[in-house]
Length: 329
Image 1 (spheres, one colour):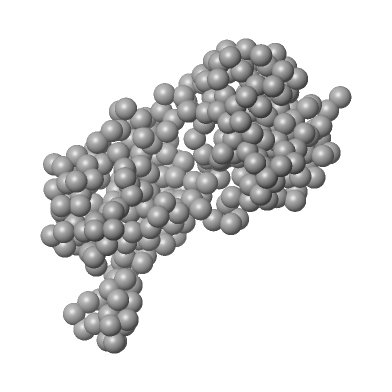
Image 2 (cartoon, rainbow, N blue to C red):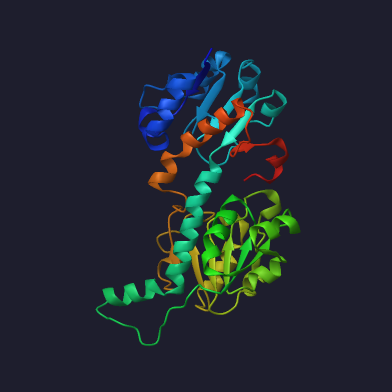
């Protein structure tokens, strides 16, 4: 018998996160129940359908699970989230019920890694300054020259999935990579081709990229004192969470113009009169680091493929284990 799988995303949303291949797999290996409406389900609707569910596939906009829901789901074996973080969506109780949880977050991480590389190259080559000068009627800036990435030292805060993706993309440039991550072992660092370092060492690198998850232990991790350690001419990239660093201190330092930053995420989005809107040493993007057409379309396919691996007793790639819970974003 095929497992009954509720596919929660609405029709418009499903088109963005479910490939044609994924649809074929769901029809071939499962008994799918599709959301045939243009609206996302409510929690009440999920409560009504959960009793006979064996597999539930979710994404952004899908209702969150509650402990009461899970208590009414004796047949539920798998929850696959075709998006990123699952910590606030699924109670930890799911593990004690023997439910396997999958998140496509690591697939999104590849897009974030590409964003970090493109942002870094953009800032190294001073492209925003050249582009702004051109729009003002100018041409070449004789007092500004770009830099190469090859052979540079890069400091990374957290060897999370996005951090690891960035590390992989940096390899062809033969850079020296320092990583601050209290959970990173020396053996794993050697496998990644990086060196474990203190947070102070990382913040003094000429290139710094922040990838820490937003958990209590990382709140204001990069404080004002560490921000003052950033060297003149350095480049800081933040694609993780705004709360990981002291934004007020960062914005204040950036206004001195002594270093550069590429910022994709904030505690609160910059207001219309934010100083970030006029600083030529800052590249600001509206939380798009992981937002790509290909990346989103692959999300449900990745978790479905992993559920099938689990069914065949093969190693999984996107399964969230209980021991990972406390350090999840």
